[in-house]
Amino acid sequence: MRIAVVSLYGKPLSPTTPAKARKLIKSGGAIPKRDKLGTFYLQLTTPTRETIPHDTVAGIDPGKLYSGLGVQTPQATLWMGHLVLPFPVVKKAMKTRKTLRGFRRYRKTPQRSIRFLHRTGHKLPPSIRANRDLEWRVLQELAKIYPITHVVYEVVKARGNKSFSPVMVGQQWQIDRIAQQWPLTPRYGWETQRLRDALGLYKTRTKAERSPASHAVDGVALAASHFLRYVPFYEKNGDHGQRWEGHCDITDAPFAVIGRPLWHRRALHDQNPTQGGQRERFGGTTTPWGFRKGDFVEATKADRTVRGYVSGYTHTAKTRSLAVADARWHRLGQFVVSHVRLLRRSTRLLIDAVASSAFLPPLNFVAAGESCRDSVEGGPLIMRISDHLKQGQSLPRQVWGAIRPVTRSVPPKKGRHAPYRRQPRRRLDQGGDREPD
Image (cartoon, rainbow, N blue to C red; front, side, top):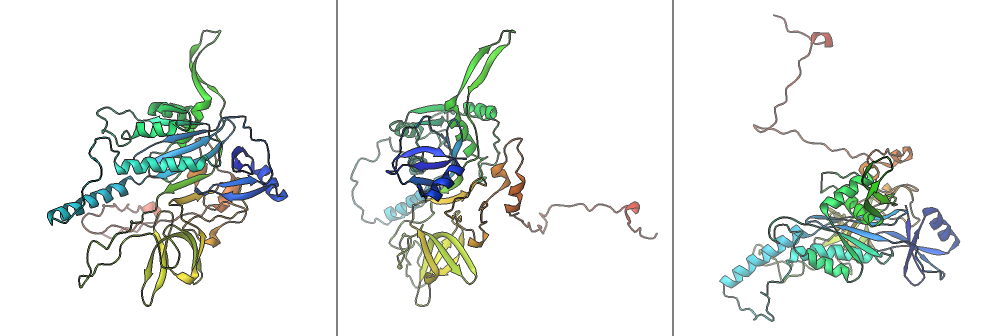
């Protein structure tokens, strides 16, 4: 594992090891910080040389609902990310807008004339653009703490026309945008699969799984392809063929699940009126008490303290409360405004960070939705077995004590559609009692 380092003036430098990072913090040579992606890094307090002896490559595996990113050097893996793309949310919003515009057109509502020729045939769909913009935003944030020199981008080549796959739409537009800032190398999907197998990386079939094995592993494989070559070889004994040559170490790295807040933009009023014909307020990102939707806060109710994101508020004559949600935008509860403390302003990103077991920085970070009492001093904050196991690798013994098992209860189905479960017969040799004739 490596810790990102920036210079006194904010320029990304070569990452360091956790042992050196502890020494720098203890001696006052560096200040611990976190970026907008929740990644821990150090900023030096004295000037130093800014030459970097190696390449730092970012790999991007784009998708329709999820994307994977990875940052790699020849010596170590620096960062892994799983992006939850806003494609279905934006698509639903565009469909609702179309329906409401149709109703207004039917009612002959006055409307302004068009200001530009919007039917030119070169417009990128909003849902596709939102996906590519999230990837671009994360790449820009990573470039602030990692000295990225190259980008490897997976190219989707499906049969049919250009609209066959949503990933193909806007693909060249994204490649051109990235190529303006970094040297870019395209890779096809079959090349990514071959690289992943050559590196011995495991990939799960569940695409929605929030772990490195779902999509981040492809980003790491793409980034590692910059340091490997598939070349032919000839041996003296007559053996020949092709093999991978080069040096690249895949190591543990910080992992984060990143998404967008599911808030609604400000509208004049709600679509459906309440009883009496009154229409309530709808949308917006501000609150009457200085908080904004998406702010990372710490809220307390009774003996429960949680950290999460502001997702809404209630302001009546008797109630003044804020709604706090976790990184999946699931509500954790409503809290009185006086019991809510601001930790970080909104970055328009939802970060579900998974700390690595190798190094816990002094700057304590509790993921959204987790209780402050659940953080382990000197150990990992959130851990899952799938986040640490690779193919053929075992989990270290000291890690088992920090893993909290998750129990799930599935209620039995009732009615005519319930699955039939045959009860096993009790044999006489197992102590079963036989009914008398």
